[in-house]
Image (cartoon, rainbow over all chains, first blue to last red; front, side, top):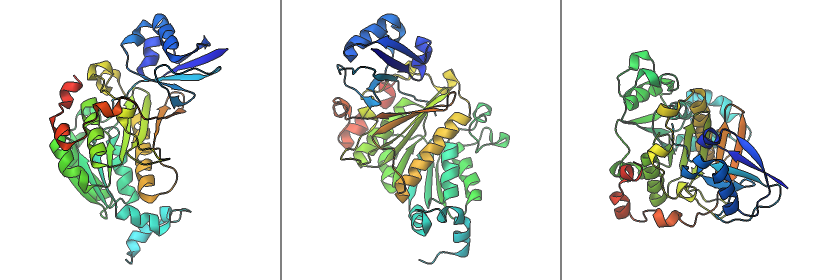
Length: 77
Length: 268
């Protein structure tokens, strides 16, 4: 039951990866904990999470085979 | 009104487009657009909006041209170094199309400016490079109910969105994605992170396209969605926005509350 997590912008620099595959996790709070353990630098980063291309609430349920995205704000112009 | 031969000839290639025609062209002629920031995003936005024939364009920027701007700010040349960006941009754009009225504001976009000038325009375009001004523009557009075309970049990636436009019963803004401003130090600027000129060029052109769609009604406007583009992989990612439970808590709902907010402080 894999899920895919994609990192955008600076988050890809902080994790050293543009995406990873993970075992299915039931909700976003658990997923965040997992990600923070694996990539501690994410803890200090601002981002919003999308599940299957839709912004999701803090404790949203993650469907199987979900594509998750961590999207930070960009400021440059 | 009968249009001149020059008008028809100048815009012939776009008037010919199916679904466009003289009606869309006249809508562009009657439109007023304010572009804030004449940098990497602002330059292509301005050049394409002048070329397409937007009737009136405002340019806001308080900076002067520097040598390190020239890798991406393609309106400017070496002879412009040290000169005022808004003034120089207006002079160059006037030569590109004399049918467009251009207003140069060589100044910062602060609360007083937003409250005084935004209502004179139909669409506001955020082509700035810092969160303080971005949140100020977002909140002013929310208060004044102005469509806002947002664009921002981070190294090889860029984001585009259209705010305050009603679509499927929803009208959302930047605070629905990020209710509270990040500190400027939390996110890399182009100065720290670097930027290749083509990327803001592409994001700026996407913003220009959204402006044209908003004015003419062609296509589908990128409202309630955040589009992210990666130049290294040529991949697009669309994120559907939803109303954030905390967006309204942080939004100044009155002119007075807006005027009192210290945006620089919030982001530093």
